Image (cartoon, rainbow, N blue to C red; front, side, top):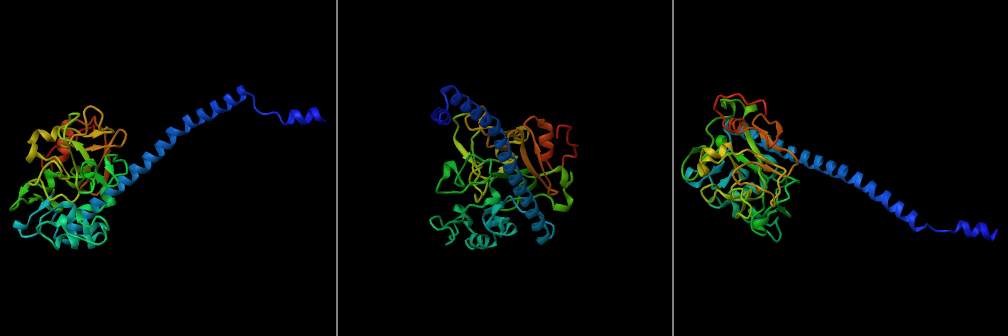
Length: 306
């Protein structure tokens, strides 16, 4: 009996313990990529929903304002208020209270003060979740990494070619078409594209930190912080051929480029088209196709790599 009892109480040998540890390590190694894929799929779905909300907001704006599209930048000298498109769209993403606070100080909407922010009372310091992609690793608790405590970041840029191509008084950058008469059609024209909160100035590693500040007042204040893609006024028409960057990191070459669309999603950049749909494209999209999708009236058919 004592012999059987001693056998029953025997622990693992060293070899058995090593085998168990090895099996656990293999299982973790198999499960971790699957978990990461699930998390990225969820982040991509959230990002897609954000772009759908932006598309719906622009349609609701057009429905409210006689088919007009929101201006990339509004200006007090144009008879309205000084502020960017993401200020203008606040009422259409269920942020009407914050919008009213912003436009109550029309010359500097971003500095409207509110009690809802606690430690951070200004409009520019509020975190607007529909403006932020979960895969945007350049956000730091909602801040653009180079603006912590100053300006909250955004993960999307408006298409300059559609929403800011006309100078409409002062530093206002206005749309050139109504929603209903975009020449190339709403399904062939980009409204918003992913554009990460912190980028480099020109794609070169070590360049100055620039990026997207959702409440930033406009290109005239500084192109380097305004939430925009396809900005040919600051960079010339050659910028239209700088294709999107997918799945890049700030330590990669090239670094995230302020001049074009970019994304932390593996293998694709998400776009919101003017018909309200969302689609992903890869970095291999041709420069011609990308330029045609940004340009609302070139009369060209989008390429097969679209």
